[in-house]
Image (tube, rainbow, N blue to C red; front, side, top):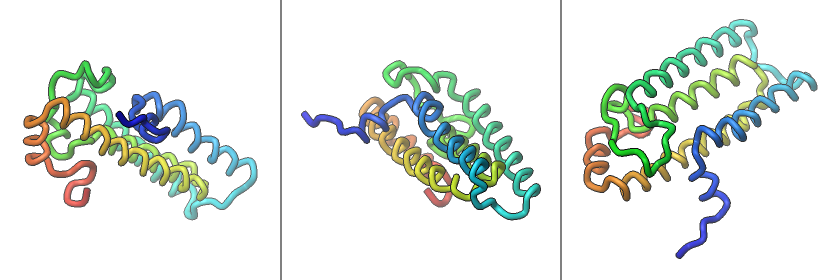
Length: 162
């Protein structure tokens, strides 16, 4: 049996805990450092700040809609009994991860520190990798039912793209 490496263990950690304890703080720390050391800013302030705030709100609304459709979203993986295929889940398979990506992108735009894009891109890659790992688990757990859902809902995060 293969011993999981650090990345496998990291990606299998509960996403909400991982995001709140590691990924979001890294983005915020870079933002604070950018303010303290006057790092390069995104142009068009305060319009970019307002746009970032609107993006955060859109991501939050999407996240709330996802939670309404998927009541067991924060349960242990083994406790999840059903594949949610209604609401936003009928269009993309991982709308909660998309909502987090949108929120983080909005935070970067609203804060306005250019260097925040680097940890954002890292978090984006980690979220995509998590979605892929989660699908491996769901295929093992639900088998044919999840395969059918994947056929009916072909896009992971962005319809027509990925």
